[in-house]
Amino acid sequence: MRLPPPRLCASGELLLRLFLSPHRRTFPHLHHRSAERMEWLNEWLWREEYWLPPGIGWKDTHLDEDQGHFPLPRDLLCTLPLAFTFIVLRYVFERVVAVPLSRCLGVKDRIRIQAPSVPKLEAFYKQTSRQPSQPEVLALSKQCGLSQRKIQTWFRHRRNQDRPDNTKKFCEASWRFVFYLTAFLGGLGSLIDTPWFWDQTECWRGYPKQAVATAHYWYYMLEMGFYLSLLLSVSVDVKRKDFKEQVIHHIATLFLIGFSYCANYVRVGTLVMLVHDSSDILLESAKMLHYAVWTRTCDSLFVVFAVVFLVSRLVVFPCRVIHTTLLVSLDFYQPFFGYYFFNALLLVLQALHIFWAYLILRMVNKFIFKGKVERDERSDEESEADDNEDEDKEHKKEADEVDSGQKTERSNSKLTSLAHNCVLNNLTNQRNINSRMPKAR
Image (cartoon, rainbow, N blue to C red):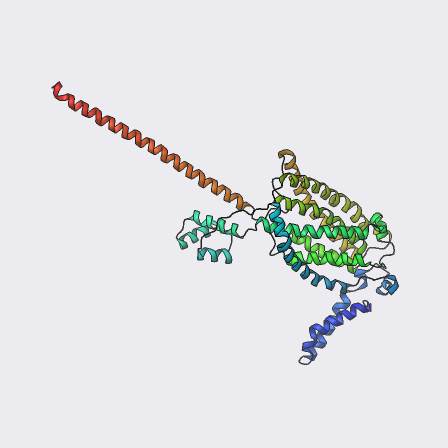
């Protein structure tokens, strides 16, 4: 029977003790069954053919202490406390640094109309739907005694109350900007002297018996902890129109980082993270300037971001990274499950890159022909962005109605004055005729 490394068995026994120790005295037979299931799951999960090339076993990956540290799955356990640490640091950063910085840069929040307190509408808004259909609006109109137009206006104002302000969006962008900048500089400093940074063939020389440097270990842990914190806080962050794609991106990134570390794809994994961080820095900085209404600087920076994104994600990533994992690696070992799974995750990321590149090219097209970037097609617009446009149209419509009403009143007043003048003239003429009648007689 093929067994996983001894350290993996020890970690499995530790988890078994943590989860099953309260039931040992009361249900000994359940403990015995659970132990057997845990042992079976542990053996099945860490089968050598899943994680290692054919002909290589776990014993072949053993490194002496003087040779360095071999990546172990239990190392990833520290990413969970790191994720919560990132959440706390973000909370402190946004209030201590980001909010004052937004005021210095002139970020202004839009003044929104507060929806009046209507308990029935509020209950429907929270429990049923934020955007009621026409039959639902008609039913609510009968229940509340309000017109359908007032019901629709109330829901629009209520939705706008929950929309994030520019300050909140600026704080999120600034937090991601600081992390991506720090991670990129740290990753570049740790990789620039490595042979596989310049020649990707070195990623596979001696694989899988490759030691992991301390700098690359922390690069991995911090990146995975950060993306895990983004996934944990996705429900409270600004919901953008590419929300589903972002969630898929975070999940694929976590699987990619975790699997590549366990399968010791650390060398090529560091290159993948470095390529992604390079363009994300420019994107978050462009967002910050967009919220601060630094239009010209934001547009110029966005063009630079578009160039870097297209080059790094559509040229460097597929031609250097995916090429070496998909083709060059076959010169050093035969394909196995880990080979197919790792490349499948990379292709998922590449598909997302193509989707975002399409949106970016649409914005660049608008910039070229209209002279400015109207809105962020990639991820800066929220999923309910049409509410603001509807609100502006509604205000314009109401203003037009007021103007038309004033014009109607003015025209009515003019007609009334003309009618009065006509009546007065007729009365005057009638009096003159009556005064002349006796003389004529």
